[in-house]
Image 1 (cartoon, rainbow, N blue to C red):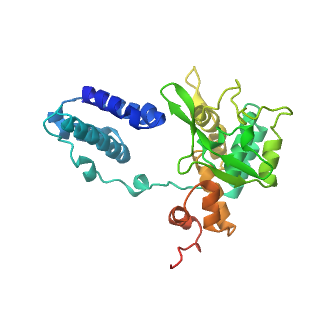
Image 2 (image 1 turned 90 degrees about the vertical axis):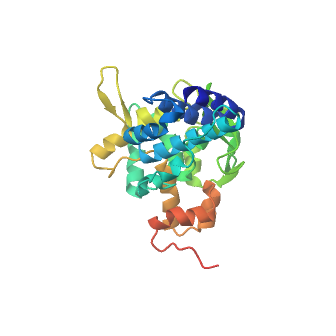
Length: 305
């Protein structure tokens, strides 16, 4: 399996995004490397090992990709049969794992408490403007950290690129997840955030949000150190901002930064903003907004057409 996956990954590399190759394909490679047996004759044992050691969603994804690898190997005449055919379809996932969107927004009070905690933090106040922009635009984190000053006009923020992970580290990618670009109308709230950090003589190509060392913000580091927390060199756990607020019972439960996006969308709907407008602001279709956020607003219903 290890050799087959290596050849399959090289075949797929020119056809997939650098981040998919660097993150997802490496993850499947690591799962395969840990298998107690790697021969195709032991496909059932491989499935059972994965089920015993991974969540159902991870097992389904891994088996789906192993099956694709073996399909390719079969067509390439490297193997005579594919024992993983349709195996992933038999994996039943819990409802929480199968949900395409795990929407668990912060309340408005929790949002404001998180922002205040960042602003008052001696270590992490540097990141407060980034956190505020995530909460008040609903943009994806990869879009926020890719913003440059040239993307800001008097009336709009133009999202047209994202920071992704490649084999060479962080990389700038043209286009967004679901579209080439979108414009977000700036109100006084967002304008105040941006004006508070804009240098007097800024270069239009400079990134708006930078790491403390001046480079591109590594959002993985932000999540695992600033937002959540980490273990120091002595093995002591250092709580991040949101983890602290959960322990203080200011925030009801821990949630990842992506919930800033879900919070923005949910609060917009609660303010009776039309789903078509919200979808246009955040880069989702109205159907997605209705389907995945209706549960957070009791009177939001898909109209009869």
